[in-house]
Image 1 (cartoon, rainbow, N blue to C red):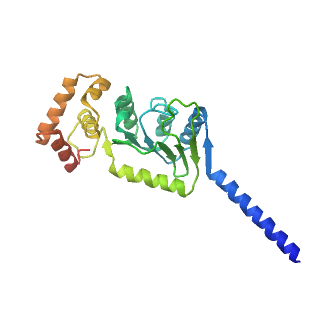
Image 2: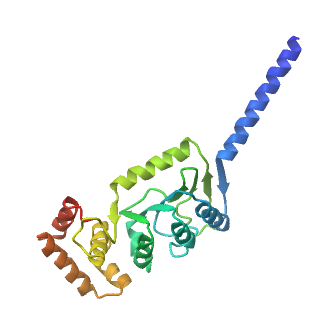
Length: 238
C-alpha cells in the first residue's frame, strides 16, 4: 500500500508538471517569421467579432498601415477599432490620407509622441505582441501570440491607460464648430505633426496649412498655437 501510494503521488506530480508546461505553451505561442506574423494579424482581424485595439509605432514590422486591408473589411462588418498612433508614424508618406479613410469608416484614432510597444488585441481574447521592436537588419523576427491570461489583461490595461492620455484625431466631433478639414488639421497639429508633413501628405502648400491654422487661431481668439490647443481642449473641439 505504501509503495502504491508513493507511486500515485509520483505519477500525480509528473502529471501536474506536464499540465503546467502544456497550459503555458497554450497561453503564449512564439512566432519567428514575418510571414507567420502577417498571417496571425490577418486571422486576428478576420475573426474579430466586437473590437480590435492597437498600438501602432513608426517603422513597420510585418506590414504597413496601408497594407492592412483586413481592418477595412472588419470595419465594414461592424467591428470597432481603437488605434493609437505614434507621432512620427503620422509623418510617413501616405499615412494621413490612409488614416482619414479609416476614420471615415468608423475607426477611433488617437496619437501620442511615443509608444512603448506595438501590439494588437482582438475582443480581449487574443493578442499579438512583437518581442523585438527594432530588428535592425536581423532576418529573424520574434513575436508572441497571447491568449487569455494575466499578461493579456496587463496589455489591455496598458492600452486603456495610453488611450486616456492620447490626443484624439478626428474628422467630426459632435458640437464642434469646425468643418471636417479644419478639425482634421487641428487634430494633427495638436498631435504634433509638422506643418510641412501635413502639407505634403494632404497635397496642399505649406502656406495653405499655415493660413488655415491662422484662421483657427482667430476663431479661438488665440495668439499662439499653445493657446489654440488649450482653447480646443476647453471647448471640446476635438
